[in-house]
Picture 1 (cartoon, helix red, strand yellow):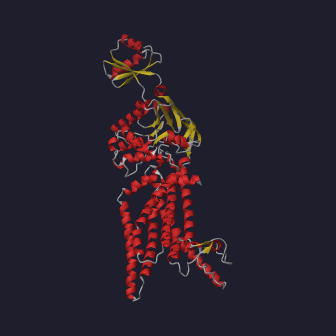
Picture 2: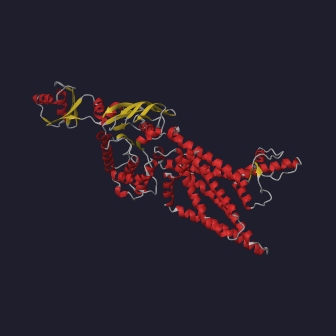
Picture 3: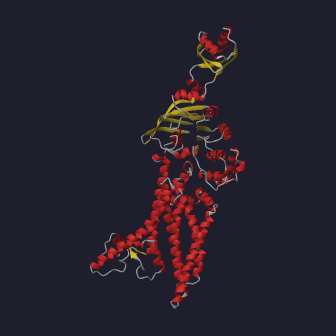
Length: 311
Length: 320
């Protein structure tokens, strides 16, 4: 649904994008991750037809952004990282205004506004003036605004920034609901655990270049080389654990074993079977209380793939 | 041409006009501004009328009611023009820069509304309010009309001049608003431009007129009747007001041929050209202001289009 190839953008002496390449398949939720200044907002603004790239190609729904921006605008719903609202308009009027701006027929505007307010759970705030809403409610209203023309692609730039935990959860659920409605969603965020739960695809950008792009599990696995296991033994004595860790490397299939607080983290070979290894540990006389694989997380993958970058 | 009219009609059914109208009229500032405007205009008209009555009593001369009415109408019209010059820049200067400051501009740019639609909507919304002020002042003028002596065409043309002046000042302010990111800079530039267009240009025009007169007197030439009027003065709406309201005035009466206007513009006085149509002061004022307004609207549209397709580099935002 979105294809970007060789995208470059320079602001003065600052190379914001340096050959960005990414693909977002139809219906996926794409997490766009990167530190401040990495190029996320610039990429999203190019897709939103607000910034023109110096070189490269961005295609949304088969339409090149630079060639037919008006057609692209009809396909996308854009929620900027910073946005304002108009004072002295009610939530309903606010959405009706944007519906009019997007060419929704006059007779449909109120219906669309009502439906969207219900979708973002602001139905009871329809007659409230926008400037009286909380930040979380304004964020949801802004998301509803991006949906007034029923776009097939959503570009959400840091939609959860500045929200309290409850509002973040509400926003996350909303994005999931939109995905169920068949929207393709590109979402940038600094809150990686949330993206991990939400996104099906992920792209890491650092200093204007893509460090990794692909399905979430694939990128995570690529970043966290080898598999790891969490082994809890009957004793938590650090000296004894250290001693056991040293002995474990002699067991077939174990690459490395380290003490991690009150348990051991064991790196194993790609082809090592978990049940075989467990049997080996028990056979070696180790009092195993718990034994489970460790899932690599997005933060770890991000740090691994972008060096010292901080999301 | 058909396309233009289609756009014009669509422009009137513009969501921005509706939204601005709702937002503007919901604030307490709207009725306050109308009250202030009418209060100032009414107080000024009453003061002129009262001074006229008192002065005729003191000098023990009989001033006819028609003269008193005419003087009051003239003064109020000029005062209304001054008020419009003060109000219009304030209303239009924040139209586009305000959208940027509120961070709502991007949301407009990714919508279907064209750059022309945005600029036109903003202009119409600002002028609609000015128009409301002008229309709300009609009862005050109607009060003066009961004294007679004011012709209907004088009323129509003075009101047209006021509206066109508001349109011009609003367009200039809108251009600055599209150019600058900050409303303060746009407002200062808008007032500066209004001063240059309606005050400074007239002062320069009078200076050039004076220079022209000196040159002719030195050449001992007979002065043509319109010699004293440089086009910068002749096209000024205040001058246009005087020619309308004091049509028998010694200096500004009648009309000037286009060829002669060009001559005067470049300070070339002889022989007096009779080329082209004869133009009155109010006509020249309407034409030049209309042209300037259209130029500014065009400039503003180009600037807004540029923000969408070819954004300036300083538009780069956080996270870039």
